[in-house]
Image 1: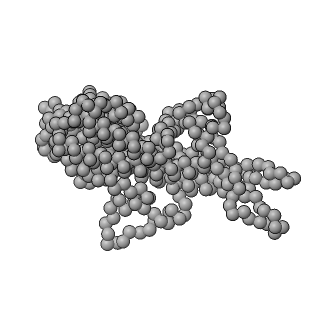
Image 2: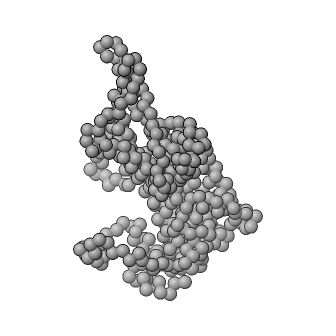
Image 3: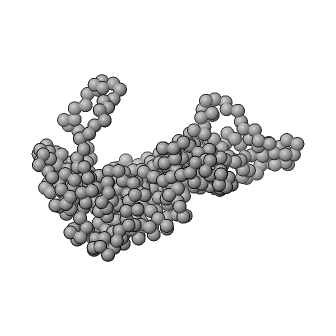
Length: 380
């Protein structure tokens, strides 16, 4: 992390203050007040005794599914904000390693016979050789976190808008497609869903340039699931220009990296098309800064609409019922069978533990505490 960012985040709290988590998030510039309000709204509707889960959903979609869906809905809200925090931290680390990698190439361009020549510096250590990988892990990690926030947003949309698709495997593209196929003439609930679909499309369009959201999801899929695309960059003059004792300019270069324009396509596909459109014609720093802002804007704008839809459903619980299809197979008991690499070397016996109040509320609303756990045997 750059010295200035590290100093800013290291500013001590007042000794007489118990700082909330929001203070640290604010220091990162990742405030999400509407999103936090939505999180509080949903948690407030948890019922810690029968019927459990989100109480006003009852009797839908059955007690076990009501608990499972409600808790996953809350997890998605909380995790979207958590992913944005991770994206902000990756961003600060990216700025630091990108600056250091660029500085290492400051003398890469030299004048020979009046003509500029390029000579990349010889790595002085394994750390120098690994410098591009440090840049890569942080821009990849940042876009992974942003795309994860978007998929968590999809889970919240599925839960709040009562879409009949799997909430545990929430996917933004699928949730968006389902919303846009709703016929508003079917019922009052369908009308509310369709109105929300219109608003979220407007929010996406307002949050950034055309295609920003699809690019983010495609880039995430590329860095996580696909073969990596060729990486291209260039050296541009570093400002301000310095002059030597002979009054001649001293060439200093800044290394600029470009991210792929169409990360959902392969190298060959793009090069067969138009090679000059292979990458985005902007610094990767500009692209990444824009992605953070666009995702933050989308979350905040959509949170307002989700709060409104949630409130409407609470007042009209029969107009839009929570579908069983969100957890079609019911409670899973399947295990991978993996017990670790050194099973039994540590003892884990959770008879007693410390948790925050939110976790305790979730467990009580899920009938997991000792006094209600046995009720699961009778849940539908």
